[in-house]
Length: 261
Image 1 (cartoon, rainbow, N blue to C red):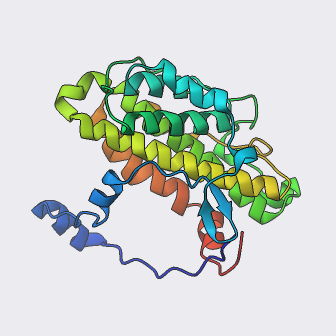
Image 2 (image 1 turned 30 degrees about the horizontal axis):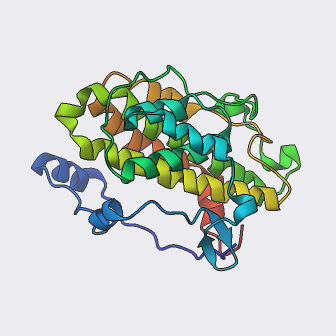
């Protein structure tokens, strides 16, 4: 893996400055890479080689039957519902990529589909409360494997969250526009690629996703916004996902260390 470098601290607005920004309606500048990201073709760099992301070889290409499932959907939302009903994590990642690739090729509508109350998941990992998640020392596993498993879990949740947003709010297509759903489908594809990378590295360390207990705080919070797209946009991408990644001291401190995972 490529060594991580220490990142500079980001300036955060606090107190009265933050209140002034909110009061005046000021907002951050748009991400300069947004249009490039939206126009980019689906990325097939779903493995991690000595020089970084690369295309998987034939043996690593994955589960063709999972990718074939995308052909059963007649719309983006139907393919999203298929992903949400897929329990196998790698199968979910493969189906996500196949579905987004099919959507990106053009010709499919957003359509309508019904989102399940909960995404399908395998028997493992064991889901526990946040306080019950053991430390890597308690489990006797290396810190890098523990961290990678946590990050893989974040990415799997992100896949389901993005597709749930596509499917659950598909009745609002006329209001939200096709671009809204295209963006979230692309997010799901990005997250599925990240999940593949973490899964690959876990396997190289002798582990796999499901070997360690996890909590489902992010998905429980997601369920609270299931009937309100405005709440979903405000709470999940802006609060819950950053908290999930950055407010975990172990994640933050480990990722910022100048070392390889």
